[in-house]
Image (cartoon, rainbow, N blue to C red; front, side, top):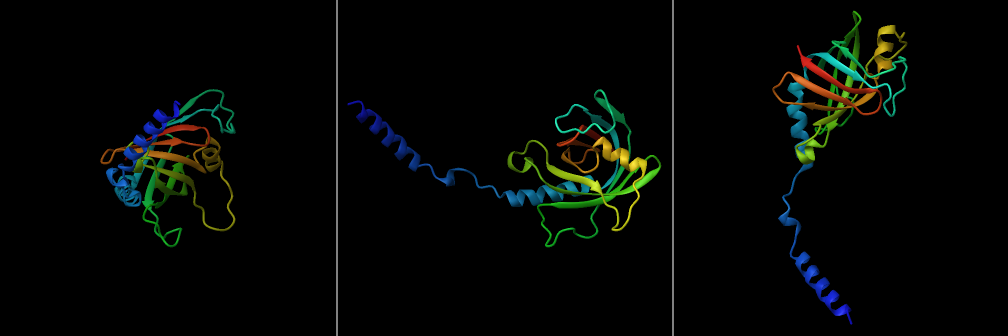
Length: 192
């Protein structure tokens, strides 16, 4: 009858576990932390940034090689990005756990309107990893729009209509975006 030691051990473990309550684990308000992270990032992001290095992997898992790149490539000082807080919210009611930004991107002596919406990343849960994720896209006014070669290049490169993770050190003039879906591995920014 080997069942008795097993039942006795199970009962001891069960009683021990009953003594463990949720009160022993510190309670964390992830919504509150998300709001705090978004507020801290806002002054860090607003301004003018040089895309110092844009690293592209033409063999990435989801990359559509529209530029016919044959090997990993790094574009240096590719463009300038100006970021401002969105003047009008794109979603109502507003959610303080998310942030909305507008701005411009300059490339080839042309300037194009951009936007991105940001939401918290793993930083909220662990204090490690990216602070946020964002979807980066053009923001042209409604109506007809003729696509110019410069804006088409930025889209084919994988910069536009891409989701990125964002990492920055508050108070430092640098920022890093890591591409999540297309060919851009990483963008290193320097604040102007």
